[in-house]
Length: 414
Ligand SMILES: NC(=O)c1ccc[n+]([C@@H]2O[C@H](COP(=O)([O-])OP(=O)(O)OC[C@H]3O[C@@H](n4cnc5c(N)ncnc54)[C@H](O)[C@@H]3O)[C@@H](O)[C@H]2O)c1
Image (tube, rainbow, N blue to C red):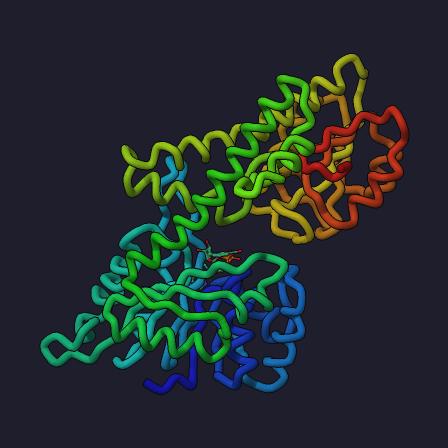
């Protein structure tokens, strides 16, 4: 099949880079987002979030006329759905964004198109998405049954690292799973337009599981490091030195502990496996619980450090879920700052996050939390808690006054 036009549904951290890189290869891309402010920003050539080099791609493609954004889907040869897949309160996957996006695309299909689900999804989500398509369009089919025109449906999970998306989109290997082998081959051909990594084909459910297994692997290994950090603290050992020395073993590679695990992927995706097989996914569930309990431990460390100080001032370095990005989603740092503020109503929490201009509502609503520069915060604070290892923090922290208590959850001080 020839693919000259692509509709990318969801212009967030994944959809917009994918749209922009396809457009840079002279594919005509229509980006679709339900948020009018996102659509307006893209049509101006702007990027509504921080991702290195993305702005250059977006403004270039908009100027060339290969990228345009709109709020409603339009006909195209292929569609890529990159909408959120959060979980509900009980950790059950919430597929409502995929359903809404698929039902919005269905009316513009003519038959013969390729539809790719890129959102990280629980097992069988691609098949459910295809069923929503067929509910809307019983005149179409997935395999040509009864002579109805075919729509090829595939899943291709995204594994890029925020902060390196424009590089990794090109260099990473990809796994493409089709509901039919033909769908997988068509999807592979589309990614070959910009991807220089190897593109490996399989079935859709295996592709769904591959992404979930990758992130669960990371989560379990981070949980091991986080658990070690609690044990090391209890027995009075420096966990950073401990890990550095243990990693000199030729077959040991322990990850780094932190204040918890955040973001839209590692803190979320393992729950999709737990939901799919609750009785079997025991280790994966425990790892989630270990990582989810770490913020509370950090809060307690801060409360211990300010004990006896009347109206304490606490500097909290970093709010994003990882270094050098502005993404605050599921960030343990935000949770920790909110909890410290609530535990110290007469104190002040000075949050330092160089990648944002305003506090997120959950912190802005607390009158004792303000956003500061690192120098201002360190100058005023009684106690500092380092929550994110942004590159700029290392030199800032190096100047911290002797005797100033620092709780370093990221090993910034070395
Ligand atoms: N951010 C990452 O690093 C990353 C990495 C790998 C995989 N993923 C996965 O990619 C998917 C998208 O994540 P993201 O980080 O890009 O999310 P995001 O929240 O940044 O972007 C999603 C976009 O979809 C839009 N949207 C929601 N419903 C829509 C609809 N019905 N039609 C059109 N637009 C709609 C939203 O307005 C938003 O702009 C998720 O499944 C996520 O797990 C994300």
